[in-house]
Image 1 (cartoon, helix red, strand yellow):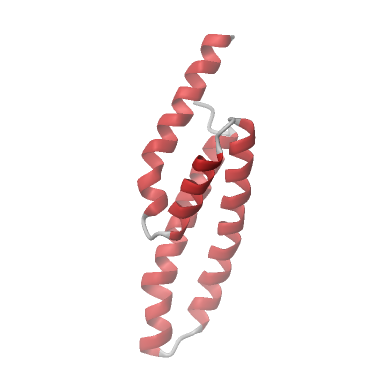
Image 2 (cartoon, rainbow, N blue to C red):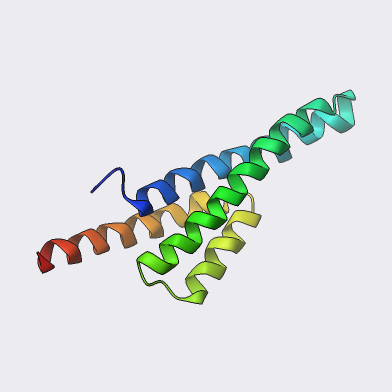
Length: 108
C-alpha cells in the first residue's frame, strides 16, 4: 500500500478530524461551560474546522479518482458529523483502499 496515495491521505485526515471532533465535544465544550474557559473551543474548534474542510475536499477527490458514487460521499460526510463515525468507517475505507491497490497490481 502506498502511504502517499490520495486514499491514504484521506484516511489519515479522517482519523485526525475524528480526534479533533472528540476533543472539541468532550474536552473543549465542557471546559467552556463548566470552567468558563472558552478559549479552548476557539483553539480546538479552529483546528477541527480546518481538518473538516480538508476531509471534505479529500473525500471529493477520492470520489473522483477512485470512482466512488454519491452514496459513498454521503456516508463519508455523515460519518464526519457523528462522534466516532470516522473511526467506524476506517475499517471499510482501509478495505476499499486495499482492494483498489490489488486491482491496480493486477492491471500492471
